[in-house]
Structures are given as C-alpha cells and as structure tokens.
Length: 325
Image (cartoon, rainbow, N blue to C red):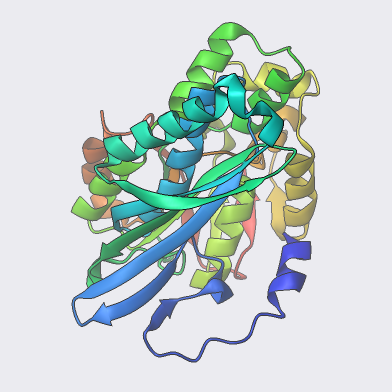
C-alpha cells in the first residue's frame, strides 16, 4: 500500500466541485454529482484467474467489481466487460465461460452488460467497469466511521490463502467449494441492510486485507479502532492453510505495511494475524454502525450476507491506528 501511495501522489489534484469522492481518500469508487438528488458511482476492477473453473472466475471477478458500488451505497445501473485473453486459446471455449459467468453475476445484480474492451494478452484477466447511482445523502464512504461505532463484517476472511493453495493444488475440495461460494456472492443484500439501518461508514475488504482497508478508512475518518481477533469470521480451512504456509505475497506485504499502525494485545497466533491481513478477492463489506443500531443491522443482515459479525469498535485515537486483542 505504501508503494501505491507514492504513485497516487502524482495524480493531478481534482478541483471539480461535483466530484464528491476521488482517489485522495482511497475509497472504493469515484462519485460524481449530476443533479441535486443524483450522483454517479463508477469503478473499474479486473484481475487474473484465482480459481480453475472459468465460469466461477467470471462470476467472482464480476461480483468483486460490483462490490465497490455496493460499499458506497449505490444501486448498479450497467457494466462493461474488461478482458485480456491469449489469442491462441480462443478456440478452447474458456473465454465464453468466463464471459458467461460474469454475465450471470450481472444478471443477479439486475443489470445489463452493454459492451466492453478486450486485448490479446498472454495471461487472462477479467473484470468490469461498473456504473451505479445513489442519492448523495445516502452515500456511504470510508470517511464515515465515528468513535463509538461498532464494526461489522459481512464475509469471512481467507480467500487469499485458499486461492494460493488452489494454485499449488493443495486446497481440499470442500474448502474450494465454500470459498468460491463466498466470493461469488454479491454484496447486494449486505448493502440493502446497510442502507436500511442508516450506516454511513463502509468499505469493502479486498486486496489490502481487513487491516489495510480498515486503516485507510480510519485515516479518512480521523479515528482509531480496536478489534477482537476471535470475533473475526474465517473461511473453513483457512487457518490450516495459513499454518501450512500457503500465504500469498500480497498478504505478507499487507501485514508488513500495516505494522507501524498496529498493536497486538495478547498472544494472537501468527496464522490468525496473517488472515487479518489476508489479501481478499470479492470480500465482504466492513461497516461502522452506532451501537444502538447494531441489533437492527445484524438482524437485517441475517440471511442476506454470508456472515454478520460484530468484530470491534471505532475509538478515539491517532487516525489509522488499530489495536487487536
């Protein structure tokens, strides 16, 4: 994340008053005001295959891109495909399955895919440009967390270590099935629950892991946080895979990067520390909700998200600092 921050420093500052959210806060999507009661929310996301099945890869990649809109409280409108694929493999039928999987995810989100862009590339890549809208007053951002808010997470962690084990052929089949199911699940239901209970601080948990995305949100919000490690939900088999060493490089970098802002309280196993920083694909939404509305939010999430876990709280303190006990 520190290397990315160095790059982003060179972006030309945005001075347009209609740009409600830009890259400066590290939020999930760009937001642009087009009318007093309407704002466009736009994101782009794509990556290389993390599972063997091309249809599942398409579903997961599309769900991952749409998650940025849901985390901002936006309703998706339509999408464009982003595709890189090696020309020699065009006759293998793989590309059709990838696109089909992405189309199914978009259909489940209630939106059409209106086009896209493709290039010839030695390594396949797939994702979406996703366009949505929201009322500016209903926008949820990573700057909306406030001291006293309870932190709620809507998907278990561990997709990074599972994906690494898949690449090495060491992931148990039942672990793969569960991980694919979680990654392919849209954050649509979680976003509906979030908006229905008045949440204003939210971010999705993806490549920088729970700790990295939480730190970014806390910096934007001017607050700190305290997590209870035992309350953080984990994918079945994730601890065992982390203990066996199937940890992606991105996860290791995440843990190193967040270390200056992190305090470990008590004897927390290395595998659990690793999973808290695990680089996620199509992860859940991390929300900050006032404590008096926590029961209402958890009830709204029940049956509408893979999990509904209260994992800690936002506290006053140095912006971006996190203690884990």
